[in-house]
Amino acid sequence: MARSRLQKCQSCGQYGLGKECNECGGPMIAAAPIKFSPEDKQGERRRERRQVGSGTWAALLPTLDPRGEEE
Image: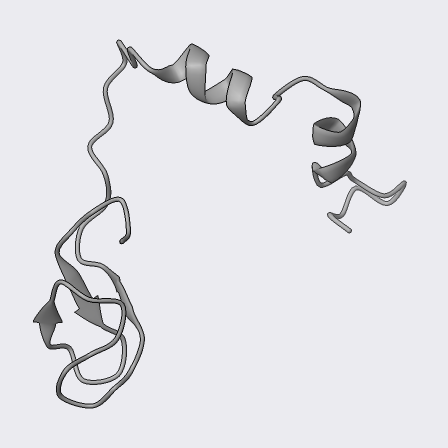
């Protein structure tokens, strides 16, 4: 199940709770973005779980080429 329970079908626009639409069988996405809080109480734990700051994490970040464009 996704982080947000209410889902919206990308194909037909129907709402539901599953990963696939009951009407057309299309993929479902979160109907609304997750709320943002500047006090992010779980931020430190989430960054630790994702190993933010490690060498492998840093290697996955997009970089600019010498011309100033994203790769």
